[in-house]
Length: 133
Length: 210
Image 1 (cartoon, helix red, strand yellow):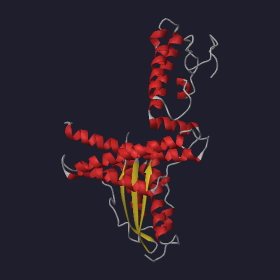
Image 2: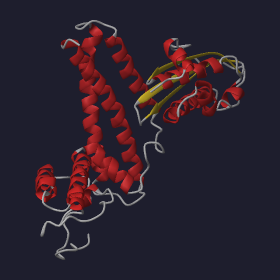
Image 3: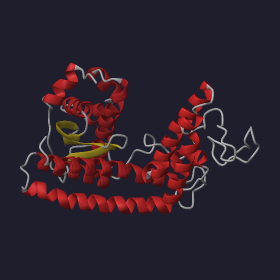
Image 4: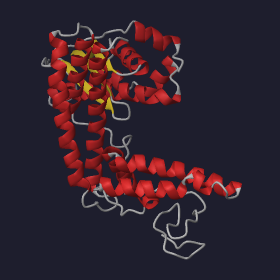
């Protein structure tokens, strides 16, 4: 299958690969998987105040899954939690020109963002994110 | 199942009349149990399945219908292919469970996709172990660690197959909650099989020249 240039770019030069300390109060971790293909994606955010200052990912899966999570971390940095919640898989599909059979990869990335934010919020008592990290 | 249109005997397979050998016209609606004339159940007797396969293969074999008109020969070829796909579903514990969960209106892997975080973290760790092993020489510690991981995966696989057996035997009612549990077990098996397959590939690749 032919990957778009943007997918290939993220696949060959993935941005923000790695891990943040998941035990830190300021870090939210989301791990999601796609049972259809066995792909698994970990996405982490580090939050200061209500702003995401760092994002890392680790994805074991196809090129589109890697590109989707790489792009997601790029977009997350500098956004507020509320802005991050607005990221939709369709935006990832559009940016990377993903074909229909790879749309589930973008869904996985959106799920990972939501899951990381949920984890961060849970660490802060489920309350709206504030400066108490 | 209806009676045979030619000899009126009760049909024991959705594809062929075992009394007179007449092919049942039309497609068999994709029910592998009806194709084999077996009771719809998760537990299957492998020997009985094999026996049915041999008997039905012979009755459906295109050579057996070699002198019949073209439409009949084509039907025989089509039914033979259907018999083989039905056998693939019935002979595989995971595929048989998957078929039953769908048949009983249970969730698909798309709708019941969420897995516990702890399990997904574990999947991530398997993949990290695989990644470390790929980057190291045969005989190194990361390679050696794969042996223990493979054994662990095999143990988990056995446990999941046992829970599938508990969930699907006796067969739950249509739409029962046990079907969602069975789907999650099948999802977990998918992750396990993929990791186990990659380990096997790496281990074999290390000993055999590419």
